[in-house]
Length: 307
Image 1 (cartoon, rainbow, N blue to C red):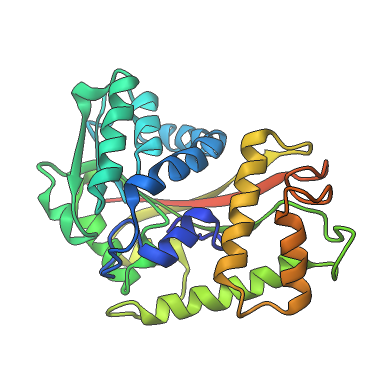
Image 2: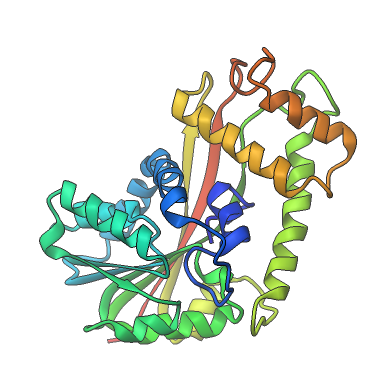
């Protein structure tokens, strides 16, 4: 919403191809059942970050009756909500039936099936199908894939119970995986990829149906949606070198998608550097080099509906 996209990580690059949360684009070429294991693995890798974000929310959101994950994908974060708030009913909302099936399976494995539901449909309209207003509505990088972000936040706010909290994960910092100088090519490869991704993200936003240019001041947007007491907090995922197999696989997959998506936007030298980084037979690739790490920063913005 990815995703965003925090500078187009894998989940955001997936969005770029097929907006998995259902944002008005008719991208039917994505096999979400096939993509689900990758999306699950990513979210599991980022679980320490999400756990800290949910712990922060739990300090002010006490004993919620209904929690809604708007744009849940395969349900990793939705199930973390079920674990964090054992007394709550959790509803995962997404446009992809196969991803919601994975979410239900995960909830069952974790013993939360009796208080876990799913709703299939396009955001934000599908939120009108909820049986009850939410005490906590979470949207992780799904809002920025809707043309009118302010209207989307207002629609989310309308589905809150009095005193309910809307929490959106948007923004943060570009992730980092490698040193500035990797020993070949021009130093600063990731910084140049950042620029390309920002330009691509701006084009994506401009091409969305009903796109409205918006100053992305999320606390101000939440206030404009009629919510009070906006607050923001940034959470880190810090997985130092040497990378675990899962972190290394995440980096390799992210760079492979970058190579595929931005082939026309990067110069020959940077493409050659990416090819070396992705070549399992090259000792300097991310598959083998000892200096691969993962550092990411995601920001959560939250506000409350007046009682």
